Length: 170
Image 1 (tube, rainbow, N blue to C red):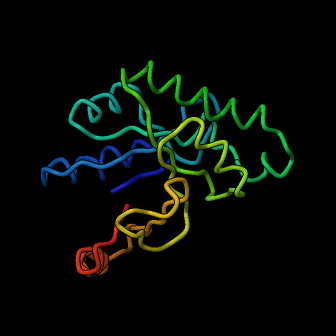
Image 2: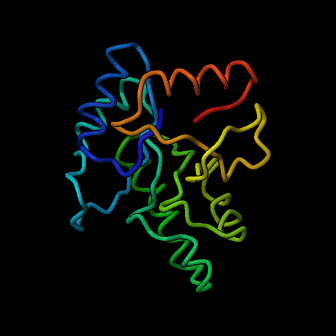
């Protein structure tokens, strides 16, 4: 299971539920916490607690930048700053080697993926779907949204489909 943005509730509810069942997940967080977002962000200690339990902490850039727009404007300096600075801050803050990211807003162009590949091993997009066992593109992985309104049967169905056909399902 993956969670975007680093909201406190994702850790307090999502991570806690996974942990109670002996599961882990990935949390994609942005590292610039100066701005006001639409929900409280998890603090470093809470994130570190779950990092130490085996949860992956990935990047959602420094400030949730629209990467597709930066690419369209050919602002590669800012694009590489929000990617590279995020990796550096996550590595320092959580004593790790950050390898994955979630693309904010799912906004990218093919050129964006080239820049992402300079900083990460994988990136999750917001495109819905399954991935082949060996994904065609490790920098635009598909996923399925699980919302508070999603039923356990829906989630079980996704897992069953992935297991039946050997799909990779972030």
